[in-house]
Image (tube, rainbow, N blue to C red):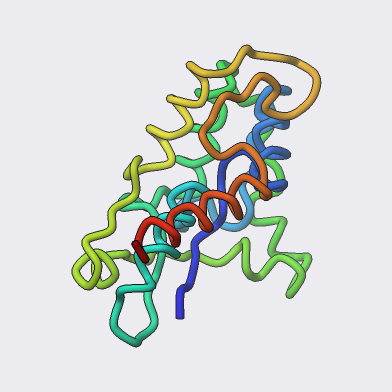
Length: 173
């Protein structure tokens, strides 16, 4: 069983929405800012699915090597959008929404070490901070629309599915 972190990158709708907000100087922080967020890029998730075909039975976490605090993640988004955060909603106030935000407001500092040891898999970019900085260099900043101009290798959910099929096909030959 694979347990994925927060999906990030082009094609992950919430990631695109958060990046669009960062372009408008809004740095969303759900829950306590010092709590952790473990994420994974969609392309890295695809390679992990392919690697899991050769893994022993078990439950594995599929996340980046470096979990970021929620404030650190919001700052990395702002840096990638080449903006300075003016607003950081909702912070601890998000906890008032109760169960609807539980999965996004709790602290999740998990490790992929067990999966790496079992399969030799590693994410191409070990941290969301570096991944977002690379994305900034590949995109033209736009004040309208999320992630316009993306040239990432895995831009849509259908391309993720295609990447998984390609990876699975290459491991079976």
